[in-house]
Image 1 (cartoon, rainbow, N blue to C red):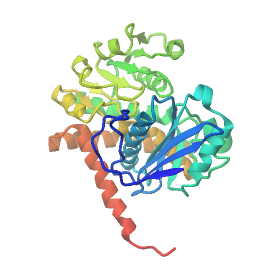
Image 2 (image 1 turned 135 degrees about the vertical axis):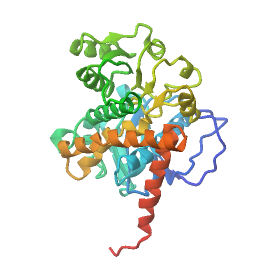
Image 3 (image 1 turned 135 degrees about the horizontal axis):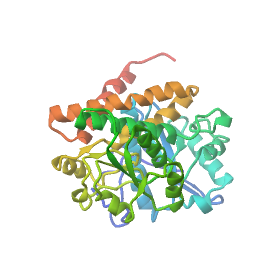
Length: 373
């Protein structure tokens, strides 16, 4: 296990060996390797100002170590802001395991990973993310005390996508309230890109609310699953590109990150962007581009925080009613961010950042008041 501390920022191009990625503002970055089990993981702790870092473990076949490092640094920073705006007493952290979960995941690998997380002494609580499931967290927990997002059989909250989708729906309702004056998607056409863990549950909420839904996914089985439950849902014949440029009111990116960039923003006809994917914007300037085009962007780390609210609640003894009530507040937080953005003349992403940083600063400074233990 190797720690990386205090490296300077050189504005690299992520994923390029010639332009290495450097942690900026992170407290700790840990490289974990166990050759026998095939484990190679990176844990990034961005901030513990509000409490132990909390964030999921992504198991993904990255093209390079640099690409994995870029992803975990971005994700861990986003978790700090997400947890702050969710009102949690947790900082931001994330982990990635490099490899194909379909072929590389094993008991030995997960338990080796658990021992590395345990070695951090509670600075980092792990949970599920892309490529990992509650059942995997049960295996990690055999070696580690700092695990959440576990199965119901082991006293956990189960699938965190339940409240992730619910929270995204609350954010979408807030966007509708801000733009249309009514907190409902009834009669609106919503395009959902990615109908996996979170996306298919979001479709459930939208259909129940009376929205007209257009979907796409690279996995035909996921699409078929949605159509079995909701035969009236449309499928974008041209995939993600066709969905982005479709005549829709709301675009909901619920697949992997980077869905919106310089090329795709001009194609959007939607007036609202609100989805469950992390890091939806290819770079920070996209937020401004959306605002200039009159597109209302609900910051991803605000609206998709229902899942982390769910797994954080599990740490104190899970209660679904309590966690759902906390996730429902995403509506109020999102609405507040839109109002701040209008008042301060900045894009919603900048307003959200300011609100999160204010909480991290105001509450985090209290740790300077010494307590006898």
